[in-house]
Amino acid sequence: MKKFMDWMSEKVAPVMQKIANNPWISGLQKAIIKTLPMVLVGSLVTIYNVIRKFATTIPDLSAISSYTFGLISIFMVFLIPYYILEEKKNHKMKFIAGCTGISLYMILVNPTIVEGGYLYNFSNFGAGGMFVAITAGLFTALVFSLFKKLTFFKEDSVMPDFVKEWFDSMLPIATVVIIGWFVVIQCGFDMYTFIVNLFTPLMGIAQSYPGMVLLYLIPTMLYSMGISGWVFQPILNPVTLVAITANAEAAASYVFTAETTTAFLSLGGRGATLGLVLLLIFSKSKRLKALGTATVVPSVLNINEPVVFGAIAWNPLLMIPMWINAVVLPTITYVVMNLGLATIPAEVFSMWYCPVGISAWLVTHDITGIVLVVVNFLVSLAIWYPFFKMYEAQEVKKEIEQAK
Image (cartoon, rainbow, N blue to C red; front, side, top):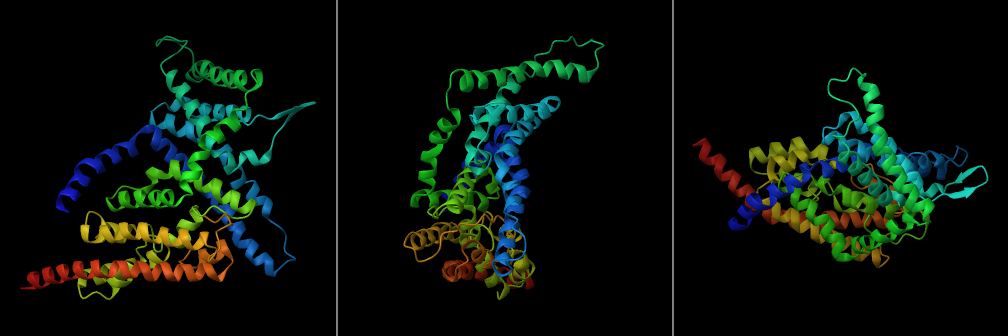
């Protein structure tokens, strides 16, 4: 075990940290984080709709979700080049790069040409177009990065800076838009469908049993090493947002969504740490008892950074049960939902800080969801218990020695 942990700390962790700090990955992460408030507004509409089922006279606010969460691809295609250029210290071009990303995206969605203008399919602007938005955003950022050092003016030019920026940005803008125009409009190539089909296998992998387990386990392992799971969000978010959108629009069939992760797997936070926190509260160790008391409220709200960095990170005795939970709970959830014993989430609800159990009801509107939460929690508690007792014994021994 020691050799394995040394290998993880010396080889794996530095590599993953380097990947997380890469400007392209970091830019994607920031773009995704910045869109979360728009998704959360859609989540508020989900809560509102629960109330509306009992108070049918209040107005229908579904359109609010359509114009927030339903436009997420537009937001992403602006933010991706913006933040990538910011990470690459190209501040003067980041705003116009974001605008150019929107221009390219509006071409790639392949609108129908009608008399007097273009006709767009509104659904293409939502989560269904996420992969296209990411592709368009990355391409735009690449072109602007290539033109970073190109300027029409000499260093000693007396031309105002804002005028220089206007002219220097014209070439990358034209390059991006002309390429999109030529491929989609002139050649008649349906780039939108091509990109969606290109990433379709990823959806299939993510929604399989091995895919669901790995996509939950790997970020959990990284988190137990102190590396934020956000490094995986550029992969996870498009998959989970497309899945929950499809579940909401048709018969729910995709198990692996952000709603499933929040409601049934991350009980108390990634790795299902609520069970550990409750054990800490009743610990014989004064330090562990104090840690449990301090972290119980955040844990109920699925905020587990205090307990992870206070007890779990780089502690093999607690990292291992966290990893086991990241395999067992997805397994239970996948099997139960595919057998029809629990309802698959079909409501957009990304309020991960919603108390344990309540989110399960909001995304399923079914008692089977609550039952699955209880089962998963008890299983996670049973997994934590023997490892916790070994860790507690060590801590109690230390405290006795220190007292002497």
